Picture 1 (tube, rainbow, N blue to C red):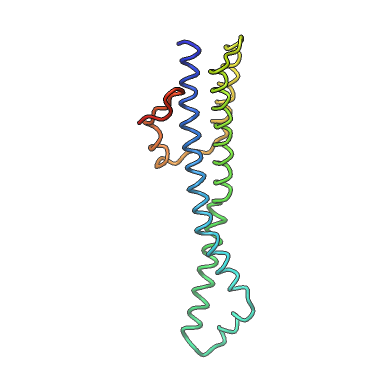
Picture 2 (picture 1 turned 30 degrees about the vertical axis):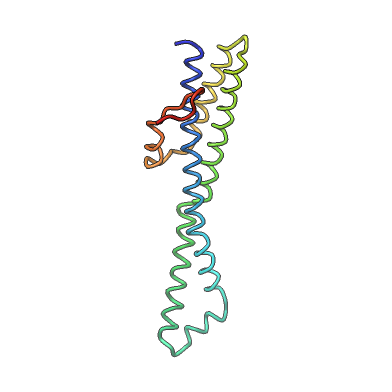
Length: 159
């Protein structure tokens, strides 16, 4: 395999990982927002002292509303803490940015080859290995979308 072929393969893998990481980041950001905002709002209702007076009320549906709101707020907060969507979003975003940086370096190296291409390739593959080890696992539902895509430095994305 020639150095250019190796660079092309590394480029395709990098594009695939970048796209998958950014899509996963978007998914976890949406989940964080979907669970975070309602959980925060419902939890804030249960913290208001006036809300406590509902328990003393003789109106049954008001008591039930107070209990349901407290339970939903607690469940929302527990979901956020347990699944830690914000941290997941940030780790996928960070990984996607790292792959984007490597992709730009590959594009520069293909455009302006250096005299020591072998050393550059060794350094890039070591970075790839480190990035892959530190990156979170891409969910199968996302990875399957990108596993069959072919990326080419000259043609862009092809199905």
